[in-house]
Length: 118
Image (tube, rainbow, N blue to C red; front, side, top):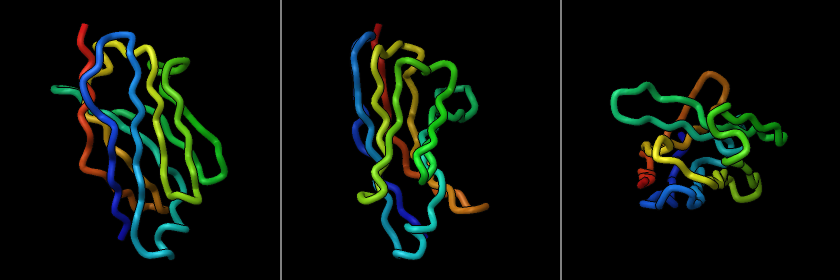
Protein backbone atom coordinates (compact mmCIF):
# COMPACT_ATOMS: atom_id res chain seq x y z
CA UNK A 1 0.00 0.00 0.00
CA UNK A 2 1.01 3.60 -0.63
CA UNK A 3 -0.31 6.58 1.29
CA UNK A 4 -0.34 10.03 -0.29
CA UNK A 5 -0.55 13.19 1.77
CA UNK A 6 -1.17 16.52 0.04
CA UNK A 7 -0.60 20.01 1.33
CA UNK A 8 -0.52 23.57 0.06
CA UNK A 9 -4.08 24.31 -0.99
CA UNK A 10 -5.93 27.42 0.05
CA UNK A 11 -7.59 30.63 -1.04
CA UNK A 12 -5.79 32.96 -3.41
CA UNK A 13 -6.74 35.90 -5.59
CA UNK A 14 -6.70 35.63 -9.35
CA UNK A 15 -3.18 36.11 -10.65
CA UNK A 16 -1.67 34.69 -7.49
CA UNK A 17 0.39 31.58 -6.89
CA UNK A 18 0.23 28.42 -4.82
CA UNK A 19 2.49 25.41 -4.45
CA UNK A 20 1.05 21.99 -3.79
CA UNK A 21 3.09 19.15 -2.33
CA UNK A 22 2.37 15.44 -2.14
CA UNK A 23 4.50 12.93 -0.27
CA UNK A 24 4.19 9.19 -0.69
CA UNK A 25 4.81 6.76 2.15
CA UNK A 26 4.57 3.01 2.55
CA UNK A 27 6.75 -0.01 2.18
CA UNK A 28 10.09 0.50 0.46
CA UNK A 29 9.07 -2.01 -2.19
CA UNK A 30 5.91 -0.13 -3.03
CA UNK A 31 7.51 3.30 -2.93
CA UNK A 32 10.38 2.38 -5.23
CA UNK A 33 7.98 0.82 -7.70
CA UNK A 34 5.92 3.96 -8.17
CA UNK A 35 6.09 4.99 -11.81
CA UNK A 36 4.14 8.15 -12.44
CA UNK A 37 3.09 10.72 -9.86
CA UNK A 38 0.77 13.51 -10.73
CA UNK A 39 -2.06 15.86 -9.96
CA UNK A 40 -5.68 15.69 -10.97
CA UNK A 41 -8.45 18.12 -10.17
CA UNK A 42 -12.19 18.04 -9.90
CA UNK A 43 -14.60 20.92 -9.65
CA UNK A 44 -18.34 20.63 -8.88
CA UNK A 45 -20.29 19.02 -11.69
CA UNK A 46 -17.21 18.11 -13.66
CA UNK A 47 -15.18 14.96 -14.13
CA UNK A 48 -11.80 14.55 -12.55
CA UNK A 49 -9.14 15.66 -15.01
CA UNK A 50 -5.40 15.33 -15.31
CA UNK A 51 -3.50 18.51 -14.52
CA UNK A 52 0.09 17.29 -14.75
CA UNK A 53 2.16 14.16 -14.24
CA UNK A 54 5.83 13.26 -13.87
CA UNK A 55 7.48 9.92 -14.46
CA UNK A 56 10.22 8.54 -12.25
CA UNK A 57 12.66 9.34 -15.04
CA UNK A 58 11.63 12.99 -15.18
CA UNK A 59 9.31 13.12 -18.17
CA UNK A 60 6.45 15.52 -17.54
CA UNK A 61 3.11 16.25 -19.12
CA UNK A 62 0.80 19.19 -18.50
CA UNK A 63 -2.79 19.74 -19.52
CA UNK A 64 -3.21 22.36 -22.23
CA UNK A 65 -5.28 24.47 -19.86
CA UNK A 66 -2.35 24.91 -17.48
CA UNK A 67 0.65 24.97 -19.81
CA UNK A 68 2.81 27.99 -19.19
CA UNK A 69 1.23 28.57 -15.78
CA UNK A 70 1.68 25.34 -13.80
CA UNK A 71 4.85 23.31 -13.42
CA UNK A 72 5.12 19.83 -11.97
CA UNK A 73 8.34 18.61 -10.42
CA UNK A 74 9.34 15.49 -8.57
CA UNK A 75 11.96 14.65 -5.98
CA UNK A 76 12.44 10.88 -5.98
CA UNK A 77 14.71 10.99 -2.94
CA UNK A 78 11.88 12.57 -0.94
CA UNK A 79 9.10 10.60 -2.65
CA UNK A 80 7.44 13.94 -3.25
CA UNK A 81 5.81 15.62 -6.19
CA UNK A 82 5.13 19.34 -6.38
CA UNK A 83 2.82 21.50 -8.44
CA UNK A 84 3.79 25.14 -8.75
CA UNK A 85 0.73 27.08 -9.84
CA UNK A 86 1.20 30.63 -11.11
CA UNK A 87 -1.19 33.11 -12.72
CA UNK A 88 -4.11 31.32 -11.14
CA UNK A 89 -7.56 31.87 -12.61
CA UNK A 90 -11.01 31.42 -11.04
CA UNK A 91 -11.54 28.42 -13.31
CA UNK A 92 -8.63 26.69 -11.59
CA UNK A 93 -10.81 26.40 -8.49
CA UNK A 94 -11.13 22.71 -7.66
CA UNK A 95 -10.12 19.95 -5.31
CA UNK A 96 -6.67 18.83 -6.36
CA UNK A 97 -5.82 15.16 -5.89
CA UNK A 98 -2.40 13.59 -5.86
CA UNK A 99 -2.05 10.34 -7.79
CA UNK A 100 0.62 7.67 -7.79
CA UNK A 101 0.68 4.94 -10.37
CA UNK A 102 2.20 1.51 -9.83
CA UNK A 103 1.52 -0.55 -12.88
CA UNK A 104 -2.24 -1.05 -13.02
CA UNK A 105 -2.71 0.17 -9.47
CA UNK A 106 -3.54 3.79 -8.75
CA UNK A 107 -3.30 5.44 -5.36
CA UNK A 108 -5.05 8.68 -4.48
CA UNK A 109 -4.66 11.32 -1.84
CA UNK A 110 -7.65 12.78 -0.03
CA UNK A 111 -7.41 16.02 -1.98
CA UNK A 112 -6.66 19.63 -1.17
CA UNK A 113 -8.99 22.50 -2.04
CA UNK A 114 -7.73 25.37 -4.17
CA UNK A 115 -10.03 28.38 -4.40
CA UNK A 116 -9.21 31.27 -6.70
CA UNK A 117 -11.24 34.42 -6.17
CA UNK A 118 -11.85 36.94 -8.94
